[in-house]
Image 1 (tube, rainbow, N blue to C red):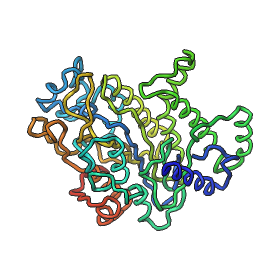
Image 2: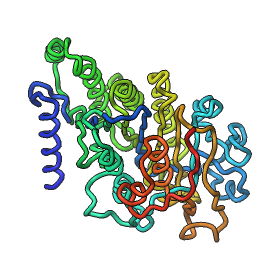
Image 3: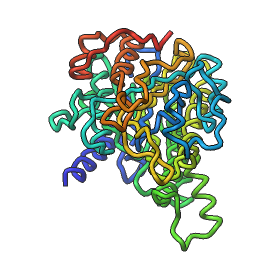
Image 4: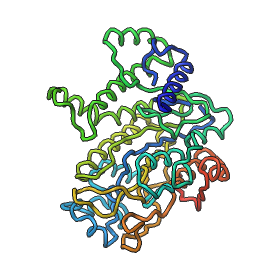
Length: 414
């Protein structure tokens, strides 16, 4: 009941801010846009499912690593994409090597939110997006930490930040003025109706280009919705349809990134979207490769489409938790604790794997099974907010990220 009420309130607010009716403009439903006196751009990508940071940025310099994952690492050339002598990049992410060499890619290893207890995706994502300092979701905190950032800045109006995609991202929910808009849950629109909408908004500077992009994006996301969690389509669908839908699913992150870049070239300064599919319990090598393709596509599209604005852009890709250090019996890994943050953008200070390495000996592990968190992932986001937008540490350590100790500046930005 609560979810239905929130959804109704969300759609009503969206339509009123857009200044048009949902019947006349059927695309209302989750891109959040909000403008501020900033020139730097920030993109937050939520990697849903618990990305295995130990497989993305491999600690090959730790002698225990190979023994913990003999199946997952079988046949891998562990040194081919070496980063710094201790870490190496998973070959599935090799398209990002030029970005690393250009100083536009960095990582933070052994990070996590304060979440420790149940290793639940739902709780972990709630805590990540709310930015709380608790090990359990705090029902009193309804807004997200990115929205609280906006609340600290005078003069913010409804085109500064937006959330793209089908999810209503909690990370941008709150009292700050934002414009919520996204492709609808189902966009059953005939070619004639689409042509009519394009004609209506042809001369409207706000909607003409955005409406066309949104209709294309909605069709892609609607196609994705027909693919189940195993990447399979209903048996009655033709091979041609299956090929088209699978291609749409793989292409969705690129389209999300392209749409994001277009808004960031206008008045928007902050954006967020999510990429799912990181829950690699089974056959991790195949599943991670699929996720790698989608994330790489998103990052490379952002760089290409932003053009010179890329130099003012910081991208932070965050996940709710890491995965167990030992592989399981099905060639995958289970829900864990310490994980990885991925950073990209022309605003970075250079290519580096940040963070203190906690080790993989039994006595070093959290609960005897997980990578021990060495740094609160919120601290990297907080330092980015401080250096990008001048937000005071006192606000970051209390209002925006409750109970956070930011520690020393890791200098992730130039």
